[in-house]
Image 1 (spheres, one colour):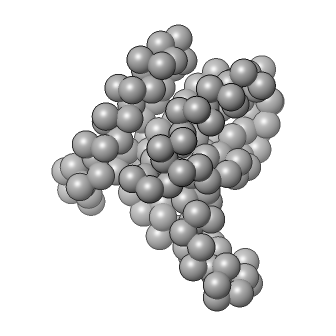
Image 2 (cartoon, helix red, strand yellow):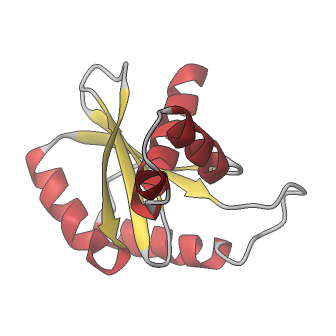
Length: 136
């Protein structure tokens, strides 16, 4: 089986998480500077088989778009142009950053580590992926 890759897209940096090849465990992969994301994904797909991309769609509690929603939609369009054969599924990313921050705080990390926004993005992508795996 191939992996599932989860993307927590952001204007400055993007958190990534992947499953193991059996799609049992979600693990944070890394955080990439957003301008370098497409290049990173091309390299990653050349090394690892991926069968599905999950992209967090930012919405407000009332399901309306956030300020980040147009950015994510634009990224999805670009992604589909670059990787037309790769299936993409949008997932709800509401509260994942908040949940990630809480999870990091519970890990007992030092204050400076807890404030690392790149780590928050990676953990948020992992939470999205774990939620998806739990449903299927």
